[in-house]
Length: 316
Image 1 (cartoon, one colour):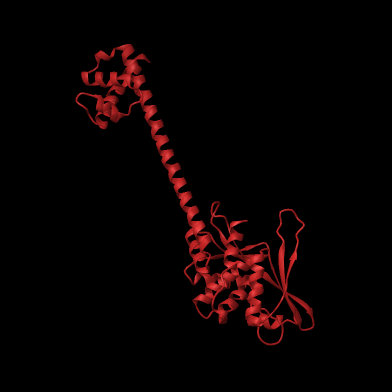
Image 2 (cartoon, helix red, strand yellow):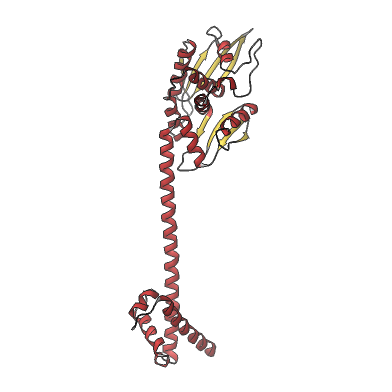
């Protein structure tokens, strides 16, 4: 099961103690997962479709508890490979579909079937209701990427005005949602991991939040380890290359003018470097009598390199 489906399953189990907030959540689910079917003169049905059984059960429960509507859940089996079945709930005209849509703020009051293309502000009476509406919007038309791959959370709707209204609602809580068109839909999305974490917390997806945070920690640790390994590899390569160059310089002097022709301080470091090719500058300095620091060793080896370069110039 995908991370997005697991998150929706978790949210489907969240039931508010406030019936009004439950109605607000249902309004968002219907808005993003529902479709209106005109069945005759002044008659319409409401069809709600989802790929998750847990969401279908939640909608069934909310319809029954808040509106006394007893509908049924039917399963449409998808014959295409690797495609999930879909669960469908239909509220008919006889069941009160028109009245339901008006109470949920989807149809305008009065005569005619005119849709309201914005978030129904009259249903958002407090912060808990706002959380419920955003939760319902995610359940009905949202998705979230696996945090192990990338950070992306979105809400998909087929109405541009509603998308902008939903974006404004979420952004009032301190977020930075944006809207983009995708084929025939409009997508409200977030890409920053911190903001996605905060929004998951607000809508009640605490298990998904913990999973996202754990993944972030693992990724951060992996990146730190890689950074340290790369740094150590670079330093090791630098040390090895420097050692090879130093030994070449000393052998050139040995084969031409002889190490004994060098000042005593340079003779000492030259002989130790030939004997201990893998030692660091600090370790070489500790073997001298008296011991000297890394910078002192480096200074002596640079003097040897200058002498070797002069010998190369004369040979050329």
